[in-house]
Length: 272
Image (cartoon, rainbow, N blue to C red; front, top):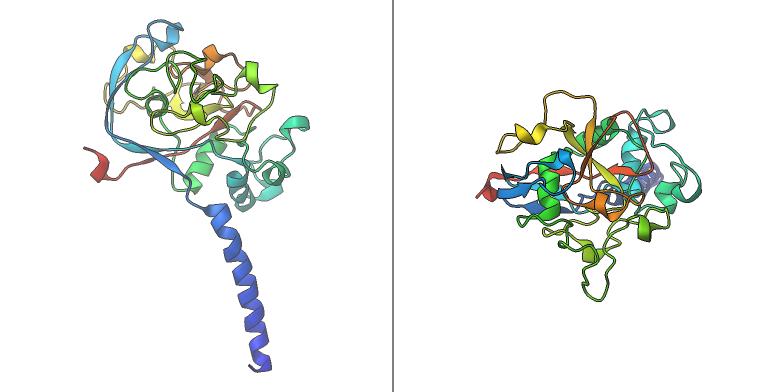
């Protein structure tokens, strides 16, 4: 091989390094398929904004198996400007870490400290979206109106344990890596839909929306001042980690207890 091939070899080495990085950074997230059909949304027995319980039909869709992690968010942050990015997560220090270092030291923890529009921007960058509130709730509770993803008793014994979620009693005021509570998995296989972090969803918040909600593929009110978060967090008791619990948060805030997961439409073959 002649001397003029050396620059080409150098290019191949650089290309292989880049390609070697991409599968980790841009690997397709794991999704759970949620089949088309009806489920019961809301509750008549808890907070007023969860009432009335009502039947909803949803087309088939996919939802992220886990919350978006620091490692998954990092390539988007780099591409959107790095240290100059408008989507830079808040750094909290201490146990919650400093961005971007935590993308390396805590790659499997959910990304936190980002407002709603950053979650939407990341989802769009991946060619995906945030789940609607109805999609999130069906993925969490299934078709049997479960209070928590695993059942109607918070401390139900499953596979020898009664701890199924990262809520205040178990958390020690700390986040946990995603998927750290396998017995808390939802009926469709989604992890951490109770506890760890609240999750941004697509909908505007209205306390009374359920009284006028469409019964097919609802997308929430047309306007509002707050966006819905679902699922409870490390900061909350188990009553806030119920599948039906819903709160409104100002979309511009970023906190140490809110993250998000992705969703995408299913192909027509899964609509039946």
